[in-house]
Image 1: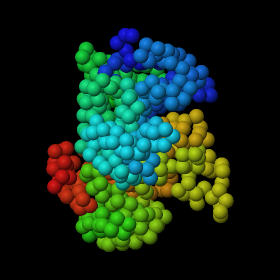
Image 2: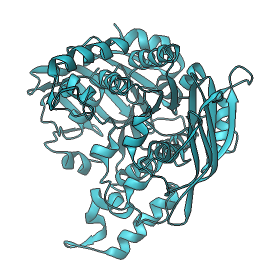
Image 3: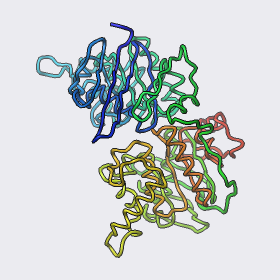
Image 4: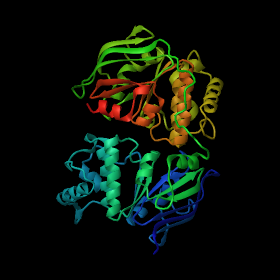
Length: 506
């Protein structure tokens, strides 16, 4: 056996004649951390699905060589048996089961035909120690935050004696502290002989952690870089990912003039009756016409709760305070009231709340404003097709047609569909909650350009983001929220990452 734990040779995979992977070669050395990067739709996830057995032997061309042996996986179980474990961005834990049940599900510890729960709990504790997670193994998954759930997924993989750990966007939904903790864990696992493949769009993290880096573009291997030999920079990675130079990922705005206040909240409070606590308190903020206002803060600070309380209060919080839209006092009892007032909300959870993944692009774009394409109560199908095609073109949605199912699109293109849906409502105030989460640098650049185009036309944008470079790069003003309260306001020219974090942690 040589220095490579994994070799994927000349892998080709097509869907209905369209090549998702075209003669891809991918090698991973034993004991290294190998990062796999590329735009959404580049073929990263498809390649990992070939590796794991989601796409079984015979569904693709080429060879998988693991530990020196050619493998022919028929399903995920086959790859897991030899030590390959894949942790996807959408975690596969069972929320109603306990931590220890989740760690050993599918390979339970048995005495005869009976599960030995005492031994299971003991071994689960050992796995939790390996991932540096202090939590009661009898806790239900639903009662834990996403950072701890991510660590439990890794503990679950370690319980199977994993040799190769594949992590798909492991820090996409984590705050900075949880992200740093996870990256340190991956380094620690490397020191204990575990090889890792990490897919990520966060290029700073990639540069910090990768021993080797491979770039895919349009289903092909573009390059592989060894940190010990090659100089790796964000600009070089971006150039190889998108096939062109992007000097400034945050494009400058043409118009820096702002109009009157489009939206304002005064002494705003939201009380969550289910949790029995105040989640938003004493918020005073506004956004002007033509302005992008950023909302920063740590995870759990109350940013999304604030947005939802403004957008018709779908969570049914107890609301106090004053809401002004174009200087007119408003009270919204339902999101449809907010939509009628010209407010749109692009949720952070596009797959769960933003889009209908089993419907096509056309239906997703028009669903929030069917009245605009209807006569009476009858939808005009020709008008619906016309509208959807216009947004497909203007938003550069990469798809075979507007009849393509949204769930089959890449994350960046799903986000463009979600934006199109709300732009079709003719809103003039747009709330964007984590607008570029889990999408590649090329798609981010396109969305930033769309945002600038919208505010140049007089729209107002409130942008919630956990990525401080994004907040700093796109915002005209920044509000920092912590523990549901407004901790401070910063002008664009005065804002720094250090100032934002200082306010967020007060």
